[in-house]
View 1 (cartoon, one colour):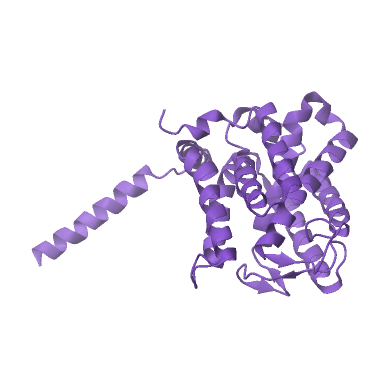
View 2 (view 1 turned 60 degrees about the horizontal axis):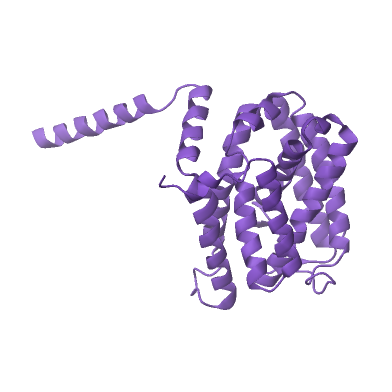
Length: 294
């Protein structure tokens, strides 16, 4: 009995010690998350997309056995890890106003995808081939995890590259639309090659040109929404000071650039490389990410 009592006391002491180490304020939690991402940048921004590219190509080519091939929870876990620098980077700029507008963008994401699956507008007729987790009306429930970070990454990169010119709303809108469409020029051909989804046929590596017209519409909605979500200077200040905030885009370049190279899609791969150049120019393709042992 005394041993059992001692064991309970030890567990209780360990739990108390753990609680004492956990932050009890939002600022403390943000600092802990910052430190966690900063200390694991190589794993998150380089190792995960490399492993992800190998796993996805291996699944498509039949090298990965069932039930692990295209396993939806493995895919979602990998995406969430690669998204973490962006989420942690943006978190200090999130207030009730931002949450409200992000909720609007989330609702739009589901709505436009439901319309697209049902009618083929505005992206063209398509269907999901690979199981991406729970579905709602033919649309993955996790869809915002895939879409919203993509447009936020494009938005943030354009803010950096435009500098003071980003205060011009029309120029900002045009730049982000171009960046979002360019990201889809990389993403959709790679996803079609993997067999994630299919448009049936299309002039651009199996993707119809109407798809990109649809992305102009969605990018416009996204920019207007993000402008209202982050109307102050907090996001720009955070972007200036947070060196890992665009590491998710580094992952995007590695993952989808590599997949397009494997499947012989030279133009999408070149566009991915161009995003790498943009990250270098914005001082966000940090060489330190690739030398984790220095």
